[in-house]
Image 1 (cartoon, one colour):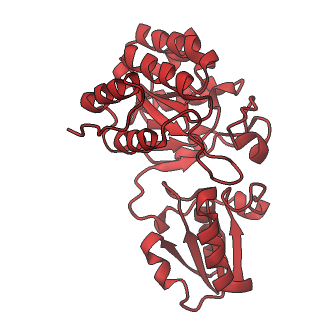
Image 2: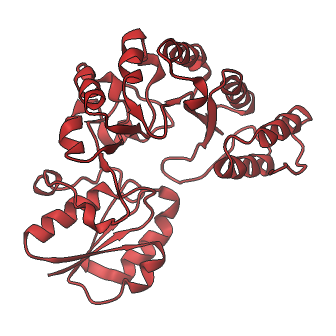
Length: 318
């Protein structure tokens, strides 16, 4: 059979599609991957299509594509169906990295789910409680760099064995969903500091109640030689309101870490309410930080703007 995999909007290689590729290739099928601008090729004849849409704000366009492809198209991804999962016989397959030829790292989940039920997060609804699904060694294989996409790795009761293996084998790692600062005690900081990080450690500061815990985590890392300026801290904005958002963003800057504002979007609709913000300032600030996250001039101008009654004057970008 001729199989076409459609990566509608993933930012990194799509793990589900890589497993589907392995499954179909093992059955002798011919598999190809389409991404982004390649959508013009969708309607070349294929026996079966798999479309994955990750983000709910792309749902409308994804549904249009599905209608054009008809019953041959099997759909999945959080953006279309929060409950969708791979069949067990597919989930157990190793990812086929060959469909993403520029991918020079391993990718996977050590754990799925989370111990928390944050109201802004899709994970509790999609994955439920925390459970181990693999080891760092199983995911990494013979590669020297790995991106882990766990949602709360440090909540695993035996996370230490993975960190020790990663440190011993000098694997360059990234937990790109962020680590839970509430769980970065002295022991965790010591183990994490022994690992090789590329690009660096990521934490999250999503609510005012976590301010002290994130500061403590950063201090714990500093004891073991991790400079705060190598730590990126995701800060949820647009959910709790402007005052809360500003306090957390400026605290991260004061600590010497790198703040990265993550705009809240409604899980079901994809709407971005920007609660309490002047939306012109909100959109421009987020766009500039995505382009130049460490620019002092952007941050200084942003501070001046919001302290000046949240006007809409232009930001510097140099």
